[in-house]
Image (cartoon, rainbow, N blue to C red; front, side, top):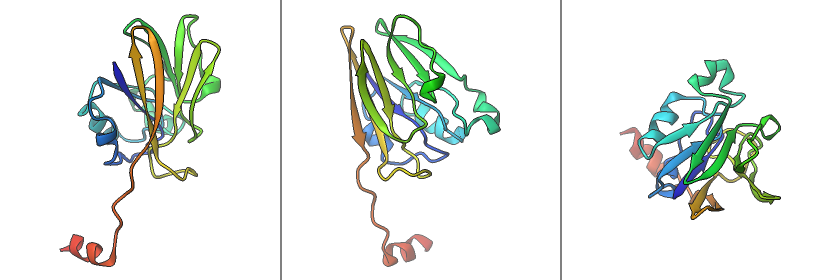
Length: 163
């Protein structure tokens, strides 16, 4: 199973996410969504599981939980926005989190800690990233994906876009 992992979109669903998530079976959003438009856009790509982040709280949390425990193909996953707030079960094999805007794919003992980085435009990150989480036969692996280059906006393209 292939799972797209995204975080810290901050009300912006980058059009480069769709090709990066082509063929995913599900999507996990690790918080700071900041817009139902982002949730709807991701749901149009694949089944979505999401948690709220600290910037979602002023928006009533967008109806999202603070933590989410999932079992996918027999593998226990824990989804949370801030790693210090994680409360994984004893059988959790992967903790997915966001908040830091720094991509991480790191095994700590038997648990994969996965932060896809930030896919939004707001924040101190230089590159926009997502991750692909693969679960096959009980094995878990992850890949950080840097979103491809944006189309350069030139003076002539700005003029054409106003027409």
